[in-house]
Length: 231
Ligand code: XMP
Image 1 (cartoon, rainbow, N blue to C red):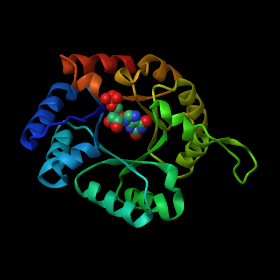
Image 2: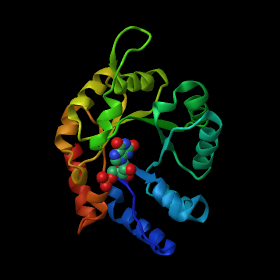
Image 3: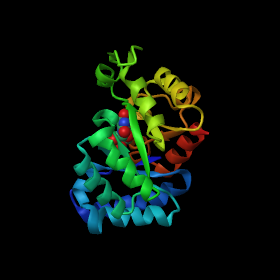
Image 4: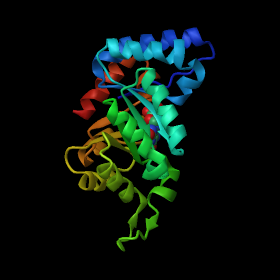
């Protein structure tokens, strides 16, 4: 999955470069993830929607990396806005919990045939502070926060989960918790130091790759190589 995080102070250049990048790598990727930095630079209308259209012209799904983590009504508004822009799926953080948090997101997306991917464990070094924190839930079985998140993903019928490629041991544990059918998406290879082969061997299904592709001298070749690593 290409993380299309290009930056450019000129919006026309940004749209042009994004479209060129998609043209160059489209046949080697399975989806395109758009982050809030592109939304901030271009806006949704006459901006990101143009890029989403091109993603669909390439017969690929467009995923909005919103990392939703707010109360229900604002989550719902953001989800509706992204879906109206054409996105097929949205990334949310389970931290807000179900009731009055992500319930509205799951209800809206499932009624419209769209997906939610839950962020279970981030790829950055500081992620450990929260995600590995030991909890003592009401069921009396102490376990780390990320395990609770993985259980929520199953219970809430998420379309997939995200676990950093920098944490192969956590990927293995999450695979055990979510079962064989839930897609595990793994960011953090290359620039962040994650090893694609180890992430896939540990149970990840898809790599999420940004800079190692779009900053490469030959993005098309870099995308092809990353695709091979994931197979
Ligand atoms: P790079 O350039 O490092 O970009 O390949 C990675 C992309 O993935 C996103 N990212 C994450 N997204 N959980 C997420 O949901 C994570 O732990 C995580 N780490 C990186 C990042 O925003 C960029 O688009």
